[in-house]
Amino acid sequence: MIFHGQNEELEIKSNRSAFQLLIVITGFLFFSLFIRLVYLQIHEGKNFRRYSDSNRFRKQLLNAPRGLVLDRNNKILIGNKNIIQLKLNLNYISNIEEVLKKISPIINIPEDKIKDKLKKIKKNYGHYHPIIIKQFLNLNEIHKLKLLHWDYPGVYVEESHIRIYPLKENASQILGYVGEISKKELIKFRKEKIPIHSLDVIGKRGIENIYDSYLKGTHGWSFVEVDALNRISPKTISPPFFLKNNPQQGENIVLTLDRDLQEFSYKAMNRNDSIGARKGSVIVMKTNGEILAWISLPSFDSNIFSMELDEKVWQELSKSNSKSFINKGFQEHYSPGSTFKPFVAIAALSEGIISKETMLESPSQLKFGNRIFHDHSTFGHGSINVVTALAKSANTFFYKIGSELGINRIEKYAKLFGFGSKTNIYLKGEIKGLLPSPLWKQKKFKKPWLIGDTINTSIGQGSLLTTLLQLTVAYNAIATEGLLVKPFLVKQIAEQTIEHNIKDTLTDRINRDHFITIKQGLQQVVEGSNGTARYWKIPSIPYGGKTGTAQVISLSSKKCKDLPRKHRHHGLFIGAAPIQKPKIIVSILTEHSCFGSLGSVPIARDIIKYYMTKNKEENK
Image 1: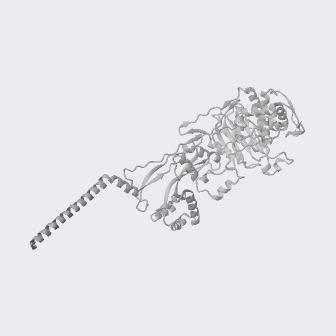
Image 2: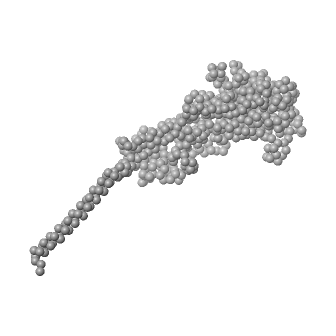
Image 3: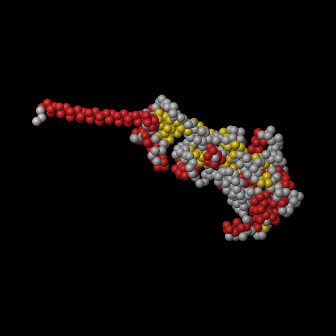
C-alpha cells in the first residue's frame, strides 16, 4: 500500500529528472548555437563579409582609351574625346515601357526609335547586354537622368571616350575607323583566346584594324557602392581591401604621313579650275619608301563611325557606285597610258635596240598588219631620239621600239620594276594589276597573241593594268637610278622604330646610264619647249615626270571634253623632284579629267612646290 506522501515524493523525483533533462537539452542547444555562431563569425566571417560586400559593391569596367595615331611630326591623326553617355541595363528594369516614357522627353529621342535599338541589341547580344542609348549628353540631360536613376536603377549615365579623326574625309581609307565588336567577331576573338568584352570597340578598317592589338589598350576596373536596388550611392567609398585597377591606354603609333602635306594635297585635289574638284588618288613618297601623303577620292568621314551611324548615311556610302571605301591608290587598277613608256624605253636601251642617240622617224600613224595605229599628233614628230620621244610622248616612236622588243622582253623588264606584282605594303586589299602575256591571253580568251597587242602594250594601253602605287615604286627606281623600295606607312610603334630595308637594286641588270637617259627625258617633259607638261614648270625647282592618258572607252570621234563625264579619259602624272637628286615621288591620278597634262600635272606642281619650300633646309 502506497501512501499519499509517498506519491508526492515520487512525482517530485520524476519532475526533477524531466527538468534536469530539459536543462541538459536546452544547454546543449545553446552550446550548439554558440559553437555555430563562433564558426560563422570567426571561421566563416571573412567569407560572409565578402558575400555581403559583393551585394553592397558593384564591380564596373573602366574602358581603356585607344592609343593615338600621330604623323611624322607628332601631330594627331587619330585621337580620343571624353563623353558622357546614357546606358540601359535591362537586367534591372522591370517595366521598360514606363522607363522609355520617362527618358524619351529628356534625351529628345522618340520611344519607337529607342525600342528599335533595344530589339536589335537584344537580338544580337541577348537580354543582359548594356545598351548605349545616347552619346554626348549635355549637363541638363545628365542631371535629370541621374535623378531618374534612383527610381530606375537600370538607367544610368557613364563617362566614356570616342575616337576622333581631325582630318575627317581626308585619309580615311588609310586611317580607317572603329566600331563596336559584332557577335561574330566576339566569338572569333574568344576562340583565339584574345581578351575581349562584349561592349569593346575595335578597329574595323585601315590602320585602326591592322594595328588594333597595339592600339586597344588594357581595361581596368573599380568598385562602386550600391544599395539593395543596385542604385549607385552618392557617397561611394570603397573599403581598403578593394583596389582600383586603372586602365592602360593603348600604344601610340607614329606614321610616315606628314599631316600638313596631307591636308595641302587634299585641298589641291579639290581645286576650283576649269575641271573642278577631282576624283582619284594622290601618293607622295620619299625615295626611301616612306609615304608622306595619300589621298583617295571620293571618301568618307571616319567620325561617323565613332557615333551612332545614321542609316541613310550608311546606305549612301554602301552604294555599289560610291567606292568611298576603296583606296584608289592600290585597290583599283587602271591603264597606265603613256606613263608606261619609260619602261619600254629602258627595255629597248638595255636590249640594244636603240641608244640614246638613235633617231627614229615618228610619223602621225603607222601600219602593222591590216591595222593602222595613230599618234596623238596629226602632223607627226619627225626624226627624234628617245629623250625627245618621252618629252613629246610620241606614240609612233614607241610603236616601233615596242614591236622590235616583242611582248616577252617588254614583260621581262616590266616585271623587274614590279608590274604585275603587289608592292606588299602593309595594308589590306592590295591588288597586283595585270601584266598581259601570250600565255595569259591564251588562257583567258583562247586566242593567240597578235602584234597589235604588243603595240598597244608598248604605249600602256590594251590589257595592261597597273595601280598608282606600283607606278610610284617603279618611277622611284628610275629617279634613284636603280633602287626598288617597299613602300611603308608606319614609322614607330610605342618607343620602337620600325626598320625598313631596300627591297632590291636593279643596277646589276640595268645600266645606270640608261636611268640617266630616261631622267633626261622626264625632265624635258616639264622643262622642254615641247614637253607635255611644259606649262607647269617651277622656275626655282627642276622636276621631271611623265604625263599619261588612260582611255575609259575606245577612241571616239568626239573630243574628250565633249563626252559624258563617265566616258572621259583618266589623267596621270608621275613626277620626281628635284629631278637630279630626287627627294620625293609625286603620283597623281585624276579620273575623267581627259588628260594628265590638264588634270594631274597642276596638282603635282603645287604639291612639289609646297613640299620643297616647306623642307627647304632639309632639301639643300
